[in-house]
Image (cartoon, rainbow, N blue to C red; front, top):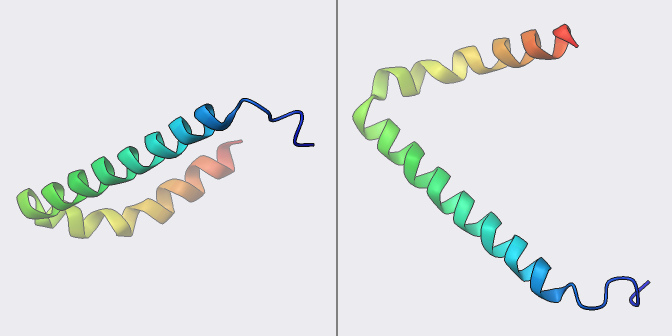
Length: 59
């Protein structure tokens, strides 16, 4: 098992780095959205489940 993944440490480190950077950027975007447009920020959780259900039923 370990022989199959030999040499992939750099790729895994890069994937973790991309994940962390993506999470930080997403958090910053959410904070800015909350500060600049509080009404739409507060209303969006009401429509997210409806949108999710609609999209999942289409498949």
